[in-house]
Image (cartoon, rainbow, N blue to C red):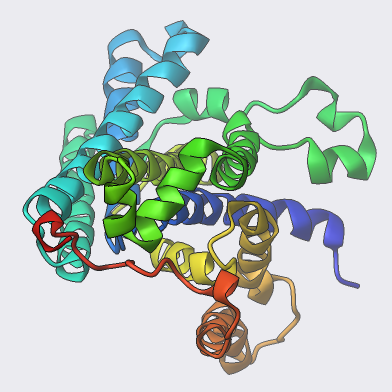
Length: 330
């Protein structure tokens, strides 16, 4: 019998990095910037947090760590690294008007290389006999759950057994949806993404909105990388650890028709598809198991095909998505 009580929490934990990535990319795309550097930004966010945690945990020892600093140091390092990546993207695409697709892909390549290089350097500093860093002391603070999670049966396991970053991801997605839909700032941001010429004529600072939305979106995406290392993998960093989760997060933006609140359930669905092969019996037939592993990618392809067939205007991407804005042409 399919074990939903153990499957749902793992699906949610697998989906949280996708939720962070898709929420950050949605904010970015609403400003008209197509940031294909999200996978690299998640890498940089993760390794920045790992570096902060590594030096703090090594300096004071796991037994002498203070809870606030154990969380605050990697969190601030992650946000700073992700912010600088977003700032670099904006400088190239908004200020210098470089091609957004090429810039995003370059940031992904750079981010993955950056993470693997500094991750490998930390492994050598730690003197580990295996190609990985284990930050169990720091991870224990990120993985702390609510006190009642163990005494409420299946309800606690399904809804209360997560670290604070999991709940923060849902909160950020709902707040982002509210801002985009119900506030003047969200209206201005959507105007910049739809028609920067009109927004500029109405007195909206197009460059400022693009910078703020992209940098904020990058910081949110970076938290997805930090969550994956500190919570999902229990503080273990290894090279090429993320796989293709960053690309799935970008595809999730299309699946949710640029609505962060829809992304909450959609990310959990994708997270479930990602681990489905572990819960469906396939015996000794490895070919069947490999077919199950294809589920999230097949769904992604189907989503992209169906999204291209949508004719409703509210289901379309921002009109100026991926296009540089030249004020002189207004």
